[in-house]
Image 1 (tube, one colour):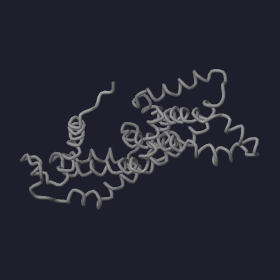
Image 2: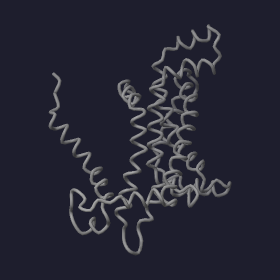
Image 3: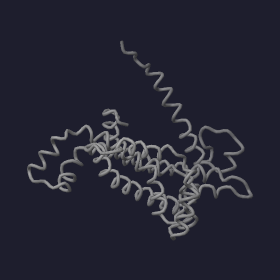
Image 4: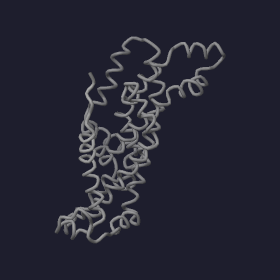
Length: 267
């Protein structure tokens, strides 16, 4: 017997989730005086000055540009590396395959703080410190195992007979993989891209440790709101609202893939 969830329960749960987002938007449309002096559900003096500050100050909007650059680089690299690796795990059996697969996942289990100092010293030595590619490569340590794990599950669901039939028809591996196999796992690639993008977007420790000026992410730039005069709450709230936008756009573009990924039970 299936239990039905009351619509009121779901409504209350959704409202509970939306309260912090609404309050963030609410704060972003106020000045600091109103934020710190009174409790208002709706701004008394509506202002877009906080957003104007972020969108016109290069030290602010370049934080978003830097974050998007290294996140996109990481997503592309992670998927490009994970696709052949996942195919190998799903199609072939070799000595130590299960141990290697488990070792990949243990990298995802490790906290970023463990690798912050080694990455900092390595990148400083070879001249990659404060570059977008440095952060993108560092995030691969966590996103590649995740991508391999997700894609391997989708690939295992594709019958091996499709591979054999393609080879009989004269397809080489590269042509078969791009034109036949990848479209079959498009949902898996979409789900993987979503998770790689989101994990890289929200990661702070490595991105802040490995950058200083040229590739400084928005999460690190947001700490500039603390000054001798206090916290600039309005600008900080506006920055938080704009930080939600890329993630929302990614979810909108891959929403169908995410639904299929959960339906297949791998995510």
